[in-house]
Length: 139
Image (cartoon, rainbow, N blue to C red; front, side, top):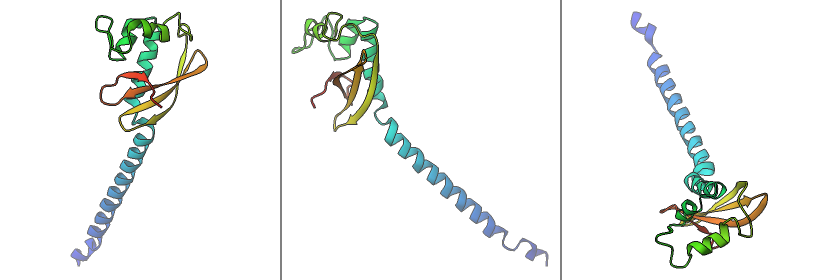
């Protein structure tokens, strides 16, 4: 009767494997939902933060490059002087001493990031998904 001593062990092993696979699947689904909810616009938020950090550190030429422009090759409809009028130390908001990123809203081709600069809510920023260029929100 020694062969009956192992009766049912393969069923128990199969049940443990099945439970492990189900647990791993549930964990993968939970991680996917967490990523989708909180981190899908992480790269765009980092880009907006890098732009505002450049402004905070008075690196205006570098901040202008986040818009896809440069001082040597300025944007056609947004010259460097206009950029400084909007974001420079003499602008309405003044020098950026502090900033905070708020909520973000994903659109088809980009992400809208709410921004608070120097303790006051400011115009939302737009970050294009494909190029990571920063701009004013069209909405």
